Image (tube, rainbow, N blue to C red; front, top):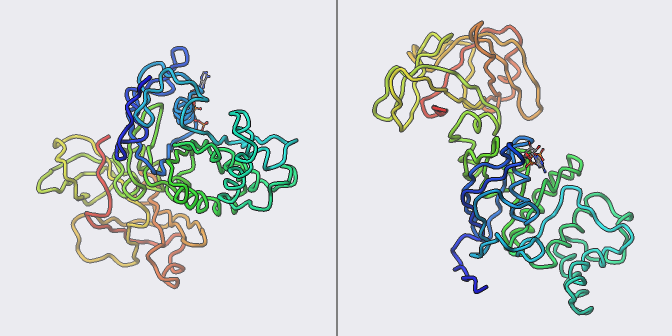
Length: 372
Ligand code: ATP
């Protein structure tokens, strides 16, 4: 039909009220999402949260139970997978073993009846994009895992989709290669300029590559934000806990005014006072989320602070190379507090050991108060 052509600043993908049910089970529940042109966007969440199902609905491999998907301004409800302006790179990046690299990459174009010369030209172009110039004549079994993965990328890019969908594209690679490929994918996306939507359960992968991330849990989108915002300002306990490492302290709101809240927390002698714009009702339950590297650890008490300070004892030290994590017992009833050595010099870092009495403190801007 005469689909309206969307303007350049209109989102390339618009999802509204999207649901997918398998029988009585809701795999994707009422998702609204807009993804901009040229974005590197990540769908992040634990196994089973529905991210792959969402990606498959974008690709047209799964039909929504409810809701709509528009891509480039066009409703996709009646558009089959092979007619959508998207292409998908699968986790297993299956390539045809009996075909040369060039034929693998050109395969989709041949199906579409593109003339031979043009296939060759475009396939070579795509191979250059993924830095496989010179590999055109090889067969897949003569390639490393990382190179096969590039072939799969080239094959998806050769059809010049408006959106590239990537389902856990790095999960089959070993740790070192996976890290190198992150940067390459980012560079590739910048070069081709099209929208990348990547599915991953690996938070460091999403944080390091994506411009924006949608965190999903149990079929629902919990928060959509750029990486640093998700890390520093998570909007729920789920997100705070899923992204990075965090100490979650439960408390009761004692007072809230002037952008600050004061909480009484069982097991902690002094109150906790944090900056928090919303003023939750006095008496309600809330959680203070503190990142391990935002907590100061000292051997002597730091003055006569009447809030945000606790004493405890180091029960365990985890050495991680870049940093150490001190696990500090602050109360018999609370989980151990995780404190990172990130801000300590290397001498002080080694000075904290097992069974050391320590003092922990933090400032009111160093964590967030979560109401859900
Ligand atoms: P993973 O990272 O493990 O792949 P995911 O977040 O991508 O997880 P989905 O694959 O989208 O999760 O699956 C979401 C939920 O829907 C899961 O509980 C899964 O078992 C269920 N599911 C997916 N496909 C089907 C299907 N065809 N029939 C029934 N249930 C399904």
